Length: 585
Image 1 (tube, rainbow, N blue to C red):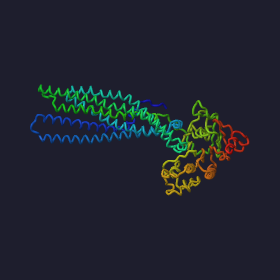
Image 2: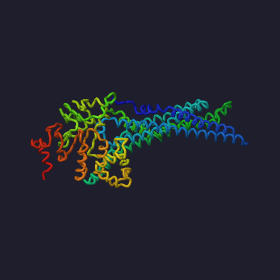
Image 3: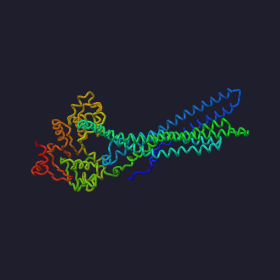
Image 4: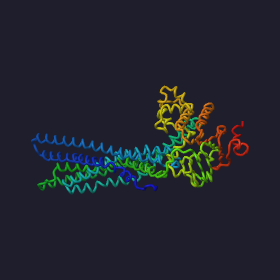
């Protein structure tokens, strides 16, 4: 899929299309509120002309004028509120769609993209940058709608009053836009840089918070603070430059608009005096001058308001670029029209499989393996030899570069990922539990699970007795359970897989965070669970895989030895040395 290179503003406008009804209400509200606002100077101008040079005050006229102004003010207030409500709703709906598309894309991109992109950076884009779009849209769009209607309306009213002055205003006022546009070029660059560094800061903060135990253990606090401060200072530097650029916009445009207002006032006064002396029937009066100056002031306001929100607008555009980069990221190959294989017994075959994360660095080459249903395959080897990579290929988290992996004689690329992964149960070295209840966490992969089923799974995983001692039992929220150890968390993850009872198991250092006694109990449970199931066991503790049907000994992406424990020990090769090294004193 080719990335969309359209400008961010055009992309944002496309998200407005489904909400055209709300947009139409906003436009109508803007027109009515602006018309009400523009009618007020006419009423006041007429009152001024009627009262200039008059000795006796007409109280009835004044009362009628006040009533008209109150009615106009109420109409303006109602429709101005409606304008704000609809534009806020429009903004919220639009960013909701953008946020949904961004998160949906995260769910379908390849693991390669997720593994190579700092998670803090992604969080910053989906949360902070989308909020920046919301703020920019909310302020910018409201000003845009009311501003455009105000400019058109005031220009029409000014032309009907005095064409010559209307031309002066129309010609001079846009100068403020040119000034704002000139300044905004530098502003955009600074805000784009600021957002990029803000993403780096979020990523670093997330990393440091997640690993506080390690930081404290290695006395790394000062280094962590220094790293954070360095990026923070860089963020402050570009933020300062961005604010300096944006701060120039408002006073510059206000200065231009003040010159326009003064020019109109002087020329208008000249017309009043001259046409009064000439005694023209429809002479340009003092009331007309007041009315025109009010319109001239209203005409320049949208330009000032636009310059006021240029900061938020530039931030929104820069943020939109970052969010759309995520949305445009290439998704995994579609599962459309692929097979749903259902429950598989566990026949797995790897034929001449080659894979590497980077072309220049080879990893797995010409890998061949045949696994029959119910076999237990242990995978051992030094760090970086390709053990976890092999599992990633079996689960199709990554696709092979060349060769073929089959499940039940069907290429896994020809079946849907959901049906493939539905046959696997995976217990990882790193635990993952979310902030819900214990019951919700354990039943995560089985929506229709009953409490009895969950309890049975927890008993098999040797975690039921601990849960039972909690005040709320299985209804305990993990966020409120600070005493939960890493071993207990891992037991819950194991219980989650025992509940699913899949046909193929993957145990990746599954008992690494559990004490020896508990591990013995878990191993017994695993032995029960693995009966009749195809199992892949990645283990650094070789004592846990003595009963495996096949032990694959990997080194540099290749299987250098294969066989049962006794066979490999008798060869006195790489496995023999690896096994004995764990028991040397």
